[in-house]
Length: 163
Image (cartoon, helix red, strand yellow):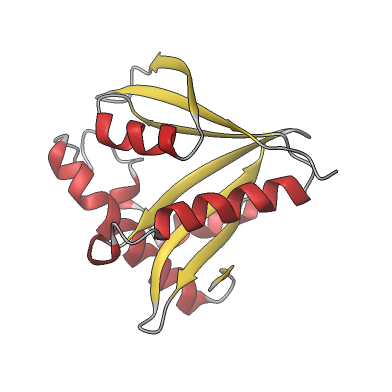
């Protein structure tokens, strides 16, 4: 089941899911709070509350055990939405949960009248980039930000409108 994250207890659980999910990537790419404090591996409850205050809608994926996934969507324009902090607990990985969250996000964007979902990832994370491409995204831009210790790959997925 995927549902909106509203309650404080759900925010706490979401922080756990996000941090656990991104910890492996942070370790793989040498990311620390000191060199990349904005990385999702270091997200806090306040960060998620601020995201929500700024217009992001937060969703959790739940199974019989509890929350195993997370995704946030933020409307950037009438046609563009940002997909943020897509996360699945490592123990629940390779089970289709990530794809379910992407498909759910695409349907949410479609119903909201959006035409495109965009996400930024670590460009050097070729495994993740391939996964997003398999989910229907395509690479649109490579960017370098002076405050980040990696290159960012922007990927987009076109959403078919409701007929």
